[in-house]
Each structure stands twice: as structure tokens, then as C-alpha cells.
Image 1 (cartoon, rainbow, N blue to C red):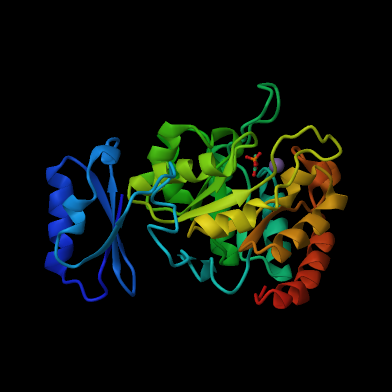
Image 2: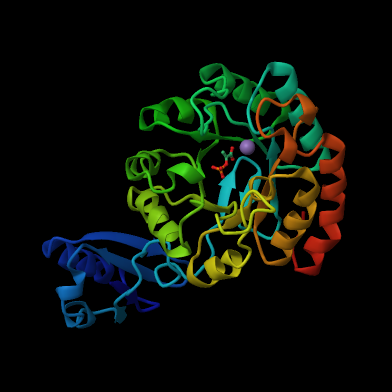
Length: 338
Ligand code: PEP
Ligand code: MN
């Protein structure tokens, strides 16, 4: 249930709504917007509670039941777009954010060379997997803690925030020490204990779409993070599994305007994992920007032929740099900057 307060509602009036909800055993979350406060009333049986209980309280403008399963990520709860500041980068603002780097951190030289190249080309955030969720237990699993150390060193050297994927709830503290943004990968989008754990951290979270999950399931997963008090969730569309087999996954560009319509959270697009092939990446990246994405996450490797993971879909540094140049006018045509 969403209680929208009047523009000039006092702090006491907001508090009386909060106290009423708590006395009925509900949890609450406040959106202290610039214009007005919105109170989300959360609980499994809000459906049985008459809305009049809140509508009658002083300072209340309206009370609405949210029939969607997601609440905190919905635009009803927070009409204004969420903007997330990470160092000197903002996600969800006018300027698009480009996250780039290797699929996996492999060694110091590979990471530093990539960081320098993508930074020079205009990327704002460095990516690199230290713990890799691999389909086979016999594939390279990542450098783990040594990879986190290299990411932290690269962040310092190139003054770029870094993002890396978490696969275990027990690692949240470790990740918070080493990286600026924590990624929850596609395979873990509905790992609810992992979502709850990253929701307790102070780091922004990139939540990739599960490749067999609907937009509704994705936003409901985001609610797990928001409900723990972490407001900084960046959604990342990375393609879904369909009958089409000419690409690794089918990039669902329609999720971008759908998310923009129903949610306040920023959405970026990973064209690399969708495409599965470097030659397709630029077109998908451009399509994402044209469709209104807030940014991109792109796999880049200084020598894709030698890459331990996902070499076929990785751009070289020069391909990436060319793409960045091409994105400028395109971004401008949809009212954004790169
Ligand atoms: C990744 O970004 O490194 C990754 C494994 O992607 P996804 O979770 O989308 O497959
Ligand atoms: Mn990859």
C-alpha cells in the first residue's frame, strides 16, 4: 500500500502514518522526495487492511494499493528517477555511464592495460570478474581475492570505480572493502539470501536480469535489496534465453522502456553477453542507447585471442575506442551525453 502525503504535510503527520502502520505490524519505507513524502506500507496482508485507516489521517493526500508484486522499485513509490553517485560518476543522470573491462581479471598486466585503454576511450567504471560463476566446475573460476586486490589497485591508479560479481553471501564484507560496486549476476538474480546480503551493504549493486526471468520478477528481486535499506540498485539487461540461437542470448531491448515506465531505477545494458560475438556488440550497444538505457557494460580485452573467458565476445581496445566515438552523436540525438 502506498500513502502519498500532501505537499505541505508536517513531520508529525508523516510520523502518525508511520506509527499507525507499525502498530498494525507492517514495515514501512519512506521516500522523502523533494516535492512530497511517500510512505510504502509493506507486509503480507496489507490486502486485508482497509485503506480508510490511513486515508483518514491528517496530511494524507491519497492511499493506493499496489497490485504489482514489487513495491519499492515501483514508480508509484518513487516517481522521480533514482540517480546513484559513485565517486565522480553518476548513474541515471543525463550523462550515460559506460562500464568496461575484461570478463575475468587474469593478471596484473591484462587488467592495468585494459583499465588504461578503456579510461582513455571514455569509460567511467572498470569491470572485471574475480569470482566467476562458470557453467562447468572445470573452467577457470577466477583469481578470487587476488583479483579483488588487483581491481582495487587499478581503481586507485586510474581513478575509476570498479565493479565485480559476488557469488557467495559470506563475501559481502570482503567485497565492500575492495570494490565500489557489487554485481549480482544473471544466475543469481533470484538467490534471495544473496540479494538480502548485498542489501545490507553500503555499496551500490548492479543487478543483472536472470536470463529466464520476467521484468516483474526482476523488479521484485530488486525489492529484496531495497527492503534491506540499500537504495542504490542499477538494473542490467543482458539478454534472455529464447528459441533464437544465432546469438548467445536474445537482447530484450523492450525491457528498457518497460523498466522506465514502471520503475524509478536506472537501467544499463550488457550487449556482450547477449551477443556472444564481438562483431555484434556495437549494434546492440547503439540500440540500447537509442532505446533509452542509462549506460552500457561492455567486455573489453587487450588480446581477446588469449582471453581465459569470453574472448569471442570481447572487444579489443581499439574496437572499444571506435564504438565510444560513435556513441557520442547517438547519445546526443536522444538527449544524453557520453
Ligand atoms: C558477467 O558480467 O561477468 C557475467 C557473468 O554476466 P551474466 O551474469 O549476465 O551472465
Ligand atoms: Mn563474461
